[in-house]
Amino acid sequence: MAPSTMQTAAILLGLATVHTTGQRLQCPWNPPADGLAFKMLESNIARGDGIENSGASTGFIELGIFQQALRESIAYTNSTTQKKKWSEYLQNSTLSAVASLSNATANAGLPLDRLSIGTSMIHQYESTKDEAYLPAIHALQDSVLQQPRNENGGLWYYQNRNNLTAYHNLSYADGMFSYPAFAILAANHTDKDLFGPEAALSQLHSLYDICKDDYNLLVHGYDASKSHAWANPTTGASPAVWGRALGWYTLGLVNTLSLLPHSSPQFASLKSLYNTLIRAQLTASDRSLNIEGSYGVWQIVDRPGATFAGHANFVEASASCLTSYNLLHGARMGWIEDESVRERAVLAGVGIFQNVIYEFLVEDGNGTVSLNGTSSVASLSGDVDFAYYVTRPTVLNSLIGTSAFILASLEVEKIC
Ligand SMILES: *[C@@H]1O[C@H](CO)[C@@H](O)[C@H](O)[C@H]1NC(C)=O
Ligand SMILES: *[C@@H]1O[C@H](CO)[C@@H](O)[C@H](O)[C@H]1NC(C)=O
Ligand SMILES: *[C@@H]1O[C@H](CO)[C@@H](O)[C@H](O)[C@H]1NC(C)=O
Ligand SMILES: *[C@@H]1O[C@H](CO)[C@@H](O)[C@H](O)[C@H]1NC(C)=O
Ligand SMILES: *[C@@H]1O[C@H](CO)[C@@H](O)[C@H](O)[C@H]1NC(C)=O
Ligand SMILES: *[C@@H]1O[C@H](CO)[C@@H](O)[C@H](O)[C@H]1NC(C)=O
Ligand SMILES: *[C@@H]1O[C@H](CO)[C@@H](O)[C@H](O)[C@H]1NC(C)=O
Ligand SMILES: *[C@@H]1O[C@H](CO)[C@@H](O)[C@H](O)[C@H]1NC(C)=O
Image (cartoon, rainbow, N blue to C red; front, side, top):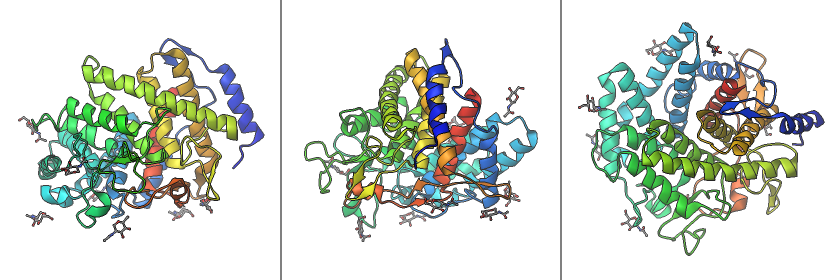
């Protein structure tokens, strides 16, 4: 959809006026509607979202990111009523997954996404000391030992026991949302290849090395065995830069940086990786602005405005929110040392979020808000090409989209 003249004018005006002083960040525009994060969270709760696993193929990662959105909202609100209610909702949501994740062998047959719930369980255990979490935490730790790996050490994303022909030896960028943070927090396990900062770093790097394209963006994943028709015959890499997978990987990197001591060698290495990755994403969002007149993260990130076999690429809501958060969080934490890059990150991060409000936020007219425009899951198990991604249906109120919206909105509120 074309942006209004006013929106374009605001974006161009923003370009001229954004500035930062030292590490202090200045918002390029008037805050886009304060309080949206909490409004979306309350809407999720009113819908009963995330109170337990939805049972969808994305059910684990949905809960993982929703629980992160809850934790960040709880930390940010000043209202004791909200803190209490949301903490209880978080406790209920996390506890709901204990029974189904307490068998290590069964866990090893689930996608790596399961570990994002493990991260929540460890946070909950540390803050509440509720031992009800321990069987699941331990079974999730043990399940990592059973996760098959490629020759290069890279973890499979999904040992789908019902369909190994379609899933064997695939590593997905998506898996890096869940694995690295869990590997660091599950430090009670001493297997150095699979737990701790070095294990997190090595998975992030090995996937990046294979999946990065000529512009330092990441394609969706790779097939180490190169048995899928889509696999690059030399590297195994998949063909397209899918917005949400890139968003998941970058969010995993951001969460990992938040857990590491700044003096550690892993922090320095991953901060450098973060800077390389976000520069590439800023170039992509600038192309969106130049070609389409508005910021936005496209379903196929590096092809704004393109058409594949007659199907148009589109701006996608969840990848936009994830990217907005990833850019703004790193800028706010001081991880972007180059001042001009930091300015661009704030400008693009807020601009992308503003575009999400304009394109996808729906006022329901009864106090709740909805988010439209989140892509359905995309998998590497079948035949994939550019047309596959741009023909994925989009849905209303995907918990991935609404949770990423909360995270992005909190960052905008903190900076603006
Ligand atoms: C919480 O209080 C602090 C200090 O008064 C204020 O700066 C901040 O904006 C408040 N946060 C929210 C979410 O209202
Ligand atoms: C959490 O679960 C308890 C027990 O089922 C229920 O009474 C309570 O209302 C729930 N809290 C929230 C905030 O949903
Ligand atoms: C754990 O899961 C495995 C694989 O699904 C199953 O064979 C086994 O019976 C389960 N163990 C228990 C104690 O339920
Ligand atoms: C595929 O995964 C299996 C199981 O972990 C592993 O033995 C094999 O080396 C992998 N193949 C490649 C090419 O990485
Ligand atoms: C990790 O080890 C410490 C010290 O032994 C123990 O107190 C804690 O409960 C363990 N955490 C988990 C999640 O098992
Ligand atoms: C609010 O409106 C939305 C959209 O029409 C609807 O799905 C939802 O059920 C409504 N909520 C309540 C509490 O009526
Ligand atoms: C969500 O987007 C679809 C596709 O653009 C549109 O048909 C639908 O009406 C939208 N839903 C709402 C509630 O705005
Ligand atoms: C395995 O996955 C492929 C690709 O997604 C699908 O076409 C096939 O139907 C699946 N087979 C089974 C047995 O589920």
